[in-house]
Length: 334
Ligand SMILES: Cc1ncc(COP(=O)(O)O)c(C=O)c1O
Image 1 (spheres, rainbow, N blue to C red):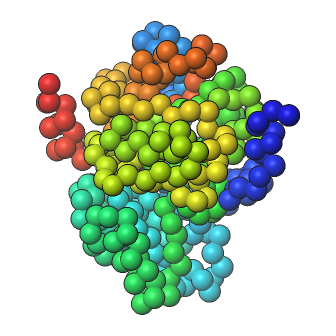
Image 2: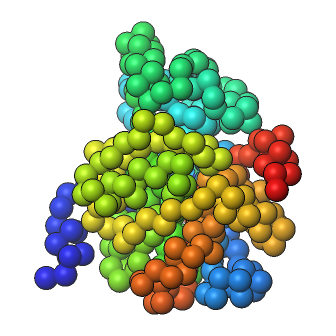
Image 3: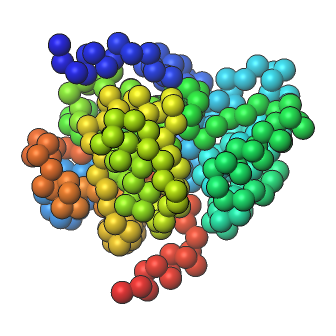
């Protein structure tokens, strides 16, 4: 029996039915984002690349899919108390926006080191910001306190089946938009995105290869895959501010079973890929959003034994919420 068919017997936090239900639920609210292509980037990578532009999603990132699915899954009584989460940015803004659309309150715990533009997005969508220290523990503790005080429903940024199902809707769209993909390259942090994407994609086409793209300054997923269990790091250091979280107990089993490998890239490669997105694709992506292209262009991928069969690659440009001041500074660095 192939490892894939064994893996698919395990019950994960989401499945193709919950992902299809999510698609129907969120359809009136989300953008069906375009797929961009570029002959120059095909030449540069030696493959055909298809960019799913989630940087053009409402709220500026794929996160709106999961947040919207979760918020609209609540019954009226639950929803009336509002929703709470902790996030360094994109999930926060997405949840605030989804809550605003449903007409309910959102309480957003944000670490003090979150990028300014992402905090502004939360405020723009009417989220109530509660500041916390930067560690995951501090974020979780503050969220628990708010939960007790308000009775609101906690919606975790990635370790939640409703969130994972929402993110999985990307695969349903992308595999309709480009029917001949053989590979997907997906940014990874807590793993909600790649978990949903991989479950849906492998259900539709079990032979698709799935690679995660991860920054070297937060390479816990690569270490976890190598160790066969969740590994966390004492600290992280990367320009990709959306990719600093660690895997959760709902995302790890899928990363373990359905993700073929994790491609680790350096920050300078991420910045170079960002420049290419701006100059060639003409889209505003944030560092975390450009990492898939960085991975495909890296030596680690180009020399990877499996990559010789990767000729039609879907890359998820996962977000575009970039702090322009920080962007200029990083572009000026030699
Ligand atoms: C732009 C962007 N890309 C990718 C990710 C990674 O998503 P996940 O934590 O679900 O792996 C995030 C998470 O915040 C993000 O903001």
